[in-house]
Image (cartoon, rainbow, N blue to C red; front, side, top):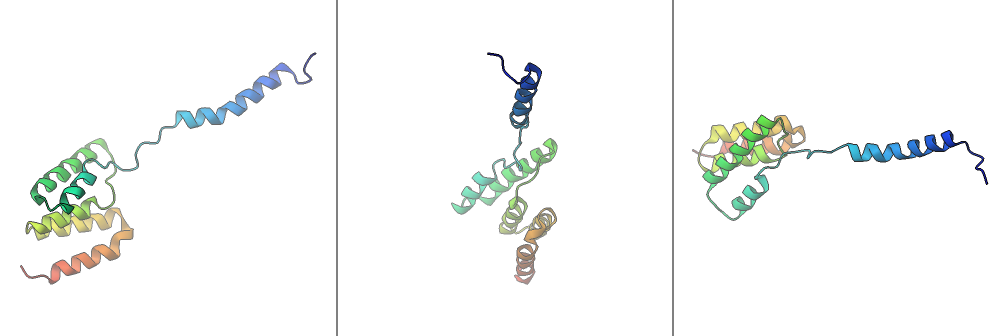
Length: 123
């Protein structure tokens, strides 16, 4: 028994139904942000470990992210700034908080509060 739909129409229908699947398989979604060791450094921070080692690791992550053209995750610059504040480098702390504000404008209120507290503390 012969089908009532011509062969070319059947083939076209199969191709049209398969196209969305091919599109899903062909697109690769790279990570939105390059996290590097950021999450690990947060863990070290909350365990009370040496901020200098954390700073070195995060600075290395930032350099690698920039070299690869990646995106810095939210919070990394602010956290790095706070680490600099722990070792007494207030200028680098302010720089990190300002960078966080630039990259993530939704953090402006919180970063402004941190900056105002920083200005209010005694050297």
